[in-house]
Image (tube, rainbow, N blue to C red; front, side, top):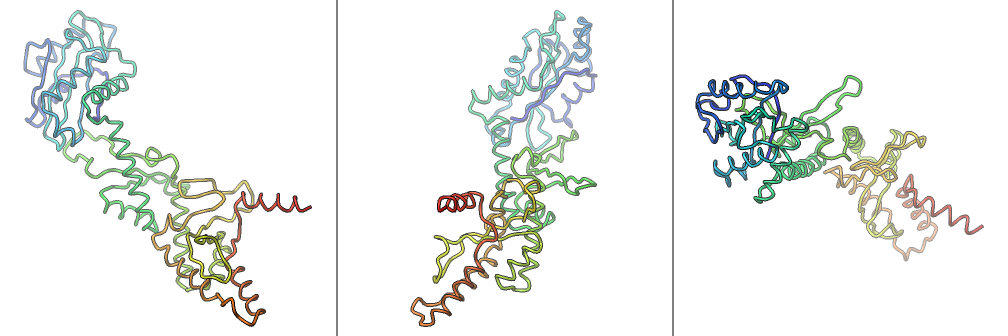
Amino acid sequence: MNNSATTRMISKIALEYNGNDKGTAIAAASNFLLSSNPEQQYQEMKTVADRNSKVKKWALTGYISPPTENTKQLSDEELTEISIEALQKIGVTDRNQYRLDIHNSTKQKHIHFVVNRMNIHGKCTVKSRKIGERFGEAVRQICQERNLKTDVEIGIEKKAEMLKNLIQSLKCSNNFDELISEMRKRGFLTELSKNEKIGISGMRIILESDINHQTERQYKPGYKLSEITSNLKIAEIKNIFELKNLLIQELKTQPSLKEFRENLHRQGWAMKVQYKNGFRPNQINQVHDIWIKRVATTTSNQQKDGFFYKKYEGFSLSAIDGNFQNIEKLINATAQSSVFPASSKNENVLEIALETVEELLKPNYVSQAEDEWWKKKKKFKR
């Protein structure tokens, strides 16, 4: 359940807001208040609060908002019980004044509270230190006891769903506009933040159904990309779009595999083909994946590992590109057209053909592990 609690000085407006909700508020509970009128209730609370001159922010205000699936399960009485129990866990006693009201004017039912931190004897029973954190923990504990989803559990589920849809949308998008459009089809709004120096610098993803257009108070919905995952950065997404657009341009001319590899290399990218069961000369070889990485001139400008990018391998095209089959067909066609039958009488022709295929298909770079293996092998031969 989403929740909030904060200490502050209030006016009668706070109690009027609680008891109104566009005329639809339902009074859920009150304690040590003689009047039912919000203005008079404020005067009663203020009189008690003035008994302790040391505490300026004498009121505790906040809300509990159960998710839609929990709202259907909870009656108004149960929601009220949960709220009072949570308030008791942070110091509210049966001697503190409070008023609780259920609001239904928005699409999601929620309960608001206004509590006097001073009990009727003038003693402050609700400490202000980390009040929001403590109240949230109290609500989560009660939810677990009642087998209700907590705000943390709901957040984890939403972030996982956002990441899943972001990955799928990236695969079929070539720029940020297409990404925003694709995410919108899936029920998510994507907000981009920009920086004068680097352009797009951040992203926030919002589940459309979480946006409440009816409430006057605006709560920032959704999660930043850094809150959804610590592995995927905006810089990596930019690199993906750069690479995908480069591939689109290069494939327009329908180049040979050799031309394709050379063109990529001239623009700072190296390509490696990964075959099913490894590459076998003189046989039809099926492509398993294609890895493309930036050509680093020094170790200092090597791109670091990311969500998609592997430092020693690069980007897996099958992971980032929904049109991976286009390049796969190009490579398969080249490999198959270069195969000669083993019974060929012209051994010189066969030898040249095999060398040509191997030259076309061999990687422009090798992994660090493979490089170290060759060094050890050469050293052992000496």
